[in-house]
Length: 230
Length: 294
Image (tube, rainbow over all chains, first blue to last red):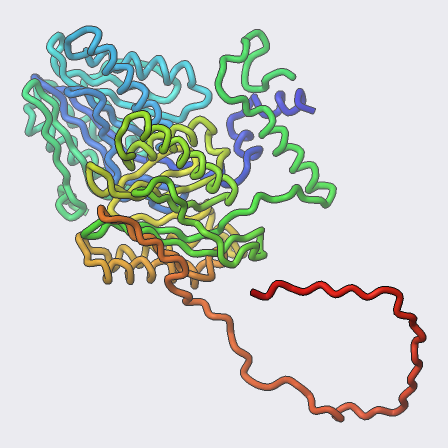
């Protein structure tokens, strides 16, 4: 019987959910809209704050911008458990690597560690991650590691279920060479638009700026988000 | 048996093997076709909650354990000891929550002896989330861990798949159904009812009395509005000074008292005939055992 289960179950990821107990099926998902933009001297990252279990919001003030090292952050989307576990593992690996090197780690190294884990366990994991930070060699960088384990550097990257609603906005409004303040406004507006339209995104908008000098975190509450015309 | 998660030529790469859980699920499916059902793990249904107040944390829980739609235990303890300064409420599968917390209590004691320091809430949370993640949600326990340690007051929630949230007030229950069907949903839990009370009345740095009332009201909301929760409210107040475990703090759901007398007077039923047949029995042996009524 086990052999016949294998053929039926292994082909489609959807049928797996029929074969596990019901309480294992309701995973906590970060729904989400996440975003990161490079500028000259650093990066601006942003995320919404909603974590859902089905239709219930388990945490309405989640912090999806997770520090991996002093000047490197990751934005998490997908399964909350998977992304938290991956982030913890990479934080440990990167911290160890940095001590060995006796210098701050490269953003590309952190992104690579994420990629290794996300690609190796791609069948078991549900995680879409954006790694962003500043290092001395290449300045501000944004690397995206979507589900499946690809790794690519992009000047601007969006992710999560809410990203679908803002691709048009991002593509038409992004210009290279924006200042830090312009980037902050850009990210805040994009997050707002996504949070308005995506049911799995909402709450407050969390932003962070990472530069050589350090880290600056901001929270924009629901009623303070940029107003749109409708 | 071939491992169904991997291609044929790859060897098992360590970690937990979940072959049998899929086989079990298939067996259950086949059993239901024949009209039988596999024995169900007892779930605690449950409403559990925790808040941070001025001097520490207060954990609260109801006391009903259900076996499908039958109450298996009217007064079970859902607030478990982890360390002298850390307690944990457990929801979901009763056995999983119980064993997981007991194991954690042992681990934490050993760790504390090894480090020479009193245990920290974040340590417990980390170990729990890594354990639950390793078992990929098959250990069906949702937990709220709260305590006061050297770094301050902390409150965490941990879901069966291993994700955690750190918040000033939390509620949890058994697995929630995402589909709002019109038929009765046995898995709708009291967490939403309790959270509505918190969202309305929670304030940071509350006084003890107000905080206890708030947690009691939240659990009561779960008891009244959720079929899987009931009986009494247990509270556990943890501060730097110590722990106050209030078992049976409140009993909002009292058993109903009968309104009238339902006895019939002797003679209500008329006796038409009466026949007496004595049974001839011989006394063979007599033994008297006194019952210990001390």
